[in-house]
Amino acid sequence: MSIIDEAKIFKILAETKNAGPKTAEAVIKKAKERKGLSMEEVGVLINLSDPRLLKEMFNTAAKIKEEIYGERLVFFAPLYVSDHCVNNCVYCNFHTENKNLKRSKLTMEQVREQIKILINMGHKRVLLEFGEDQKENPIEYVVEVINEIYKVRTEKGNIRRVNFNIAATTVENYRKIKAANIGTSQLFQETYHRATYAKLHKGPKADYDRQLTAHDRALEAGIDDRGLGVLFGLYDWKFEVLGLIAHAEHMDKAGGVGPHTISVPRLCEAPTVKYAPEYPVSDEDFLKIIAILRLAVPYTGMIISTRESPEIRRKAFKIGISQTSAASVTATGGYGKSADASQFKGHDSRSLEEVIKDALKEGFLPSFCTACYRLGRTGEDFMYLSKPGEIHKFCRTNGLLTFAEYLEDFASPGLKKDGYKVIEHYIKKIENPVMLEKTRAGLLEIKNGKRDIYY
Ligand code: SAM
Ligand code: SF4
Figure 1 (cartoon, rainbow, N blue to C red):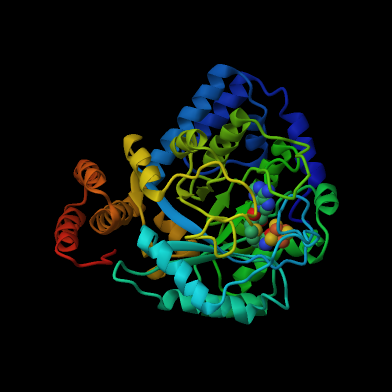
Figure 2: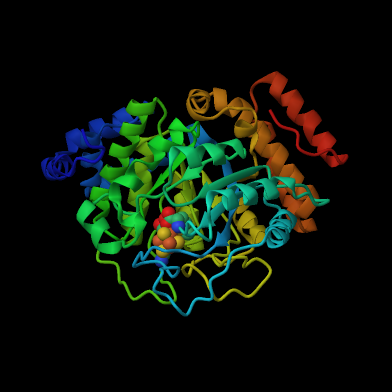
């Protein structure tokens, strides 16, 4: 059985088109149990247009987000390591036919420089981005970069979790990366629609099945935190959402571990890209996608990037997003420089401090936590712990402690004051007396200079 059964997806979309309000209400009610939804149930939500039920769906998404992820919002930054690429993806500025782009890849010295900049901004997690080029970016280079990053230390600390987004590769190569102590392996299918995929890609990435089965190979190599994604705009979002659910179901059934994260990139303009999305996704539909996914796969983290505007990001945080990038640069080695070789043009150029201030105003607790992965709570173990109650036990404490570190080391006096107010607010919500005591003691230690306390 193929992972993506297109006929089944189209059938579900057609059959759920006229599902009545009773059916939709039943699906939303089931979602409240936080056990996830079937593809048919997701179809009902995709086709929902009744304003009352849509409101109910958004409220439910916000409630699930709150119950499972609490007030935390985890921050990371991408690092573009190499834009050498042999593929010709029509939407990306790094496409191989772009002869005007002066291609570059980071030397180890440049890796160290870039990582120091990110550390000194306050980041603790990075997501590495590479183009596909066996000659320029062989797996040995990828591994060398990861090893180098973990070695970098400044007086402000170090990067504690490295995630990566590289082209689909072999089990053997994933094993080499796993051995370098990697976090999540992110790889986007871009579009689950085979004919559209074939039309938009040239080069080794044009192999739809290689892309689709990459996460299975990563798992075989021992990487159990894997991140899915679709590039919204390439094909009908309704089909893509069911594609994501089908892929997640496959991962769950085949390997016993569902996706760790789902990313929701929406197509942005890019310098040399003439491709205009055939299926542009409106802001309204984009938020609907996030809410539906939150109901369908409640325990899968959801990631939004600086491709989106501050306004959309604010709304998205409330209804489902649990992780976000901030102050991102999408050009190779672009931190600390004025970058003109970006992969695409994002819509949020605010500094990390500005994004954090905004998040605080909205009632979120910024978190730089990397504890689960460092304590071996990945894959199935992580999923088990994400059940309400369990994860809160650690996450709130870890969120508070890592945010206090940020405030001590990076925040302006005004932000520090506001930040500690938020810390005081959320510390009161820790119900477990042991964790409460540990958190209070940890905060005191952090104020006295100790760092990297986690549970
Ligand atoms: N080269 C690897 C690959 O394609 O899988 C990974 C890195 S690529 C830098 C990361 C992602 O950026 C791609 O998977 C694609 O979804 C996204 N992307 C490319 N062009 C984009 C654009 N114009 N707007 C928004 N996202 C884009
Ligand atoms: Fe290369 Fe990735 Fe850009 Fe495609 S999306 S051209 S594979 S960098």
